[in-house]
Image (cartoon, rainbow, N blue to C red; front, side, top):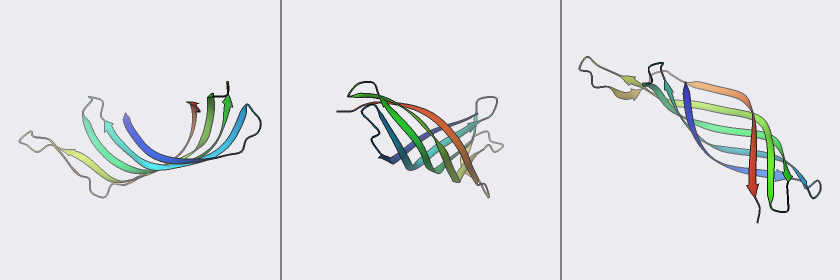
Length: 118
């Protein structure tokens, strides 16, 4: 199972359709911090990736301040700095740089959003 924490900064470009709907195009860039665990629950691989998302969405206003939204888009992750667990005969395990290991991910996503506008 892979777990990731992502931190990014983005921009939305929106065109007001009417008083209750706001279609938008958005993009964000950032970093993804990932760890992969084996079936026993021990960490066997970890890494950092460059992350980029691009998508379309719409925000629906429930009142003048609260809105909910739907997002669909594509995601790109470029992993270049992996570390793997190395356990020598002494039994002291440590994370060491993984040699010749890179991974790329291109995928789609669907997400929900909610927010309050002042």
